[in-house]
Length: 408
Image (cartoon, rainbow, N blue to C red; front, side, top):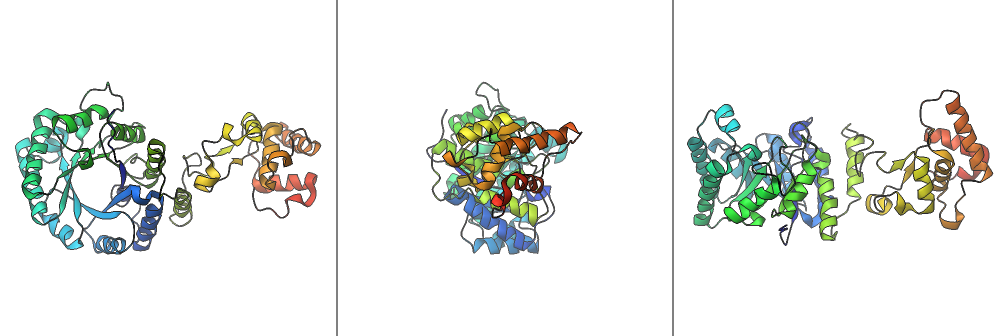
């Protein structure tokens, strides 16, 4: 492995993420930008927006005035797009550079030579405008690395050297074909891809960025592999929203960054929970209940055997201190598999009882509650107990002890 000394995160929530959902309003973009700034802190260095419409340009201007990641743009490899980028006042722009024969011949109806010349012409114009070029090598995991990509990268690096303005490269796994294993061959092997760029082509890790897709459920693991094998920047989008199956989830990259580096300075992971609430309550986009870190049930158990372990020590069945890091205490849903331990855990968490103050699962009141749960399932019930139902059941056996609590 060859992890760079410094690694960081970049964001595509307002570009690739925007392509996968209803348009955000200006107010929503600004609110999400602030959440991203809190969530990523200094580790989240950049975000990207389109620059085509009046709303795009308003959003760029609004975000540029706020503390947070650097605002960059995205453009096609067309000189006609450059004016919008130039007038936006950004210091860096992404440039679409389709790299596979699928795109060059079948989509663009160009030859490799024509495509390479087009890309060089646009990169030169961007450099001449004093803007840093970030070349998005599209569909790279299906490209001819030796025959097309290598000479293209060399020519673009030469443009940057002459201008003393380094060219950055975003390596795009457009269809999710990338593989995270060191043994995987090029062009699909992510570790070998970064060895190729750093060792063969001489691109510095700080000028490399990985942009994955999740078509084969490998979006996040491929991105971590990119970090480990020579890529400094990992690109993701909030909750993974992106084209088709989406991109690596930005919040997952934040957690993985902390795990890899042990550094959480300036990062507010509770912003993940606030962002999920905003998606649910304001944008009308609730996440699946089992969505990691943010779904309504991601740290909620129904299994009695798990609840029994939680009664003994929370660390047995909690991934980390979710109450501290995400403002999400552990939860319990009572159903036919919860057992005495599940009912006891629900009561203890609802009353906030810990340590020696906890009510044991053999307590007669717990036994009585469990008997009622069993009776209802024996009579054909097929749904879990709602918080209100559990509150009513507990009041029958614990009196008004639950009256002052709001947790359920």
